[in-house]
Length: 229
Image 1 (tube, rainbow, N blue to C red):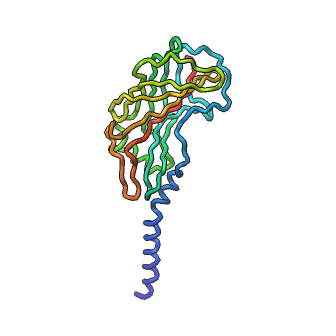
Image 2 (cartoon, rainbow, N blue to C red; image 1 turned 120 degrees about the horizontal axis):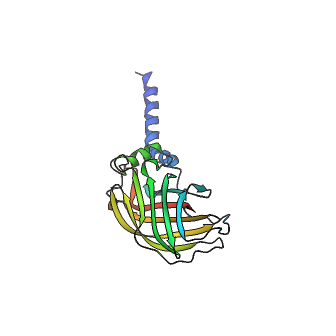
Image 3 (cartoon, rainbow, N blue to C red; image 1 turned 45 degrees about the vertical axis):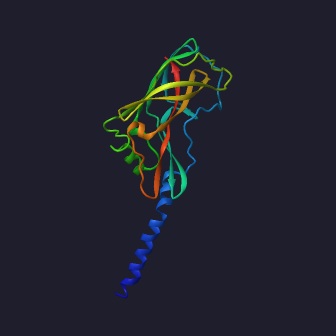
C-alpha cells in the first residue's frame, strides 16, 4: 500500500490540476478573444471600373475582403468575457441594384461548414440542440424591402445603408434590421453587416456548461465580395 500511495497522490494531483485548468485550456483552444467579426476593409481599394446598376454575384474575393459568413457570440468563462467567432467561406448569392437602390439580395450559407478552432464546439454547434445542420443545412439572408437610393462613393471609402432582412436559421425566419457597409473597388462590390440576434428567436437555448456560459445574444455576420454578372 505504501508503494501505491505516491502513485495515487500523483494521479490526484493531475486530476485536480485538470479540473482547475479546464477553463483556461478551453479558452486557449478557442483562440482567446482577439478574433474580429467580418467587416469591410478599405486597404488597397481601387477606383471602380464597372457601373453600379445591375446584378452582382458572390465571388470568393481576395484578402482582406474574402467572402465569409458566420456568428459572433460572447461567453463568460469563470467570470471572464471571451468572444467566439465561427465562420465559413461557403456562401452563395446575388444582389440587384437599380438607380442606386438595392432592390433584391439573397445569400445562402452552408451551416455545417461554419467552424471555429475547436472541433468540440463545432460539433455541438452543428448538433440538434443548436443549429441542427443535418436537418437545416443552409441559412439564408434575404433583403426584405428595397434599400436606398444611396450614393456609394467611388473614392475608396465606404458608406452605410440601413436595411431590413429576413434571416432564416434552423427553419425559422425572423425579420431584422442591419446596417450594411458597402465599398466599391475595381470590378467588385464589397458589403458586410452584423445582424443582432437573441438566440431564442430561432429556437436556440444558449448552452451553459458550468465553467462556461454562452450569452443570450450575439450576431450573425457576413462579408461578401460580388462581381457583375
